Length: 275
Image (cartoon, rainbow, N blue to C red):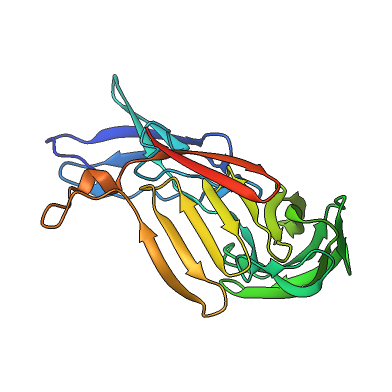
């Protein structure tokens, strides 16, 4: 929106270009009379295979991708930047979030695909073969309406104990172009009877530890550690840094912690260190 607050007509040139991952290249010219307001509109598209952004309170130093706009008003040049916080066109997950398995046990889980593209998407999901992991399929077609969630049943068998990665990617058409997403790392924890299994997910900044009865989930965000009863499916304990009551400083919850995981046969040590 541009308003001429002067007393004479003015010529304005507008040039808008998107940074990497943002498809936009728009140029137009406007003539505004005294006191007149005009709106220049243009459409931009984020790349369907653009990586997930993590621009939360702990990543303030990271710059969001921008649309850079240049206004030429007479002899004056004005540069503007508009930051964007986009999400992947297809978000891949697993249900349940933390599948509990025994080594050698066959269990059905669901790969979930959430369509955020705003239009019908169809394509296929592929699984990368992994040593120690058996699945009943490696490739499956899908079709998801805009804004909807699809679940694909998948039989998995972990042939060894511990954390077994499940690497999944989606392929689909976008305006006549084939898009292949970055592989998404999901994890299966195969816990032997009387044993323990653990995984450090660096992308999600989270550690998960399981034994026969309990699951411990530690997150870098705020250093929160939650213990859940696997059988009763309820929380048993929440551990986090506190000074209260009555004092509950907000900056404690905004801290980020470095996560470290050590494990040997039969034991696991998790260390959280405040940054």
